[in-house]
Image 1 (cartoon, rainbow over the protein chains, first blue to last red):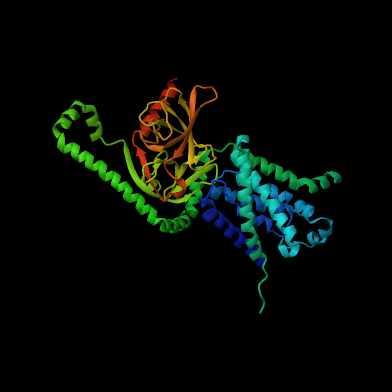
Image 2: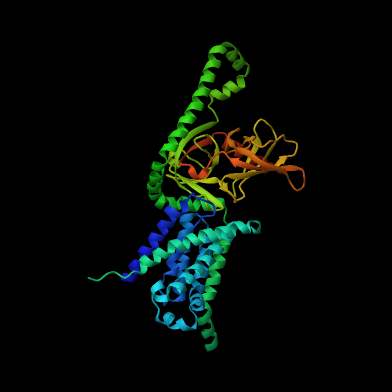
Length: 174
Length: 289
């Protein structure tokens, strides 16, 4: 129950951060970080794939509604639900299979810093690539799309890292 | 049967994913700028208040530059006003005679100018997507309607209202790849189509400008008045580069925008009272063809 409450807070905080701050960044047209994806990245490993799909659908619809993007966020979040665990398995390798079997929230402590960073980069890259390709819908803008992917993806990862640290931090017991 | 159930058990998530993805892609494929603006309008019902608070904070930090801009704008308007006052004193009689000769125009003026102006504050403004919109703190209860032109405080083109709720309006920004307006080189009658290619927030492009148009780097590009959204001669920007198109029949022009959309905090709304009448006539014309 306590865990559900934490995820509800994470969901609301990420939607507000995205809508009120990051969507209004007026620094460059290539800087469009989409950090709300952290919600899917930080879902416990043992959550059923069909539930992750439902969360991805819900998150996508809410973001499409607040960002006025008419489906692009949903198109970009749904594949993450299917690819999440196979991708984690591929990154962690044979030696870390037990970690996946044990479940829990993906974090630098549980997965190891290198595996966690690779996991975040891969998921963010897939999500941002889908988002920007569908938004541009033009091969003539492929270089601009790639530039947006690199700049925005990097900034998203830099945002997600501290969010993951705070979310997975264990409270101090007195 | 058992094998079929086992197969479905193993693949139903992927099948469900394909189905949902197909629905999402279908919805996106059938959407338009209007759909996106409508979505933003409904979400603004809930988030508009919060966005307003953030906008107030952002606005506070840009007060100094805002004041500078207002002062320079007042200077320009005072100069124009002084010019008209001088004209009125110097040639009042001639002017009246001229007006009487132009009775049609006079009657038109007494019936009311076709354009009315109002100020609004920007509460949300995106520039980092290919379909950029801004949200204003004025809606239908303040008289804002779809199709109103939006200008910067300096009077440069910014976009037009594409959807409005009771308290907010969503503006299709000039930095939106769906934005279209007709523009011309100031002082000339040759016109072209203005659009944003999504590559740079400081530039838009004008295509199909006749190759017979006299054009030079630095020329001002203004609206033609053919549009139902904007009055004529609204400044769009300045020619930065131009070249003949592939078919050698027209110029492709790169225009440096007169306004930095990302720095805007307030805008001016322009309503054209003739717009509805023009729309009705055009609908009628299309129906009779």
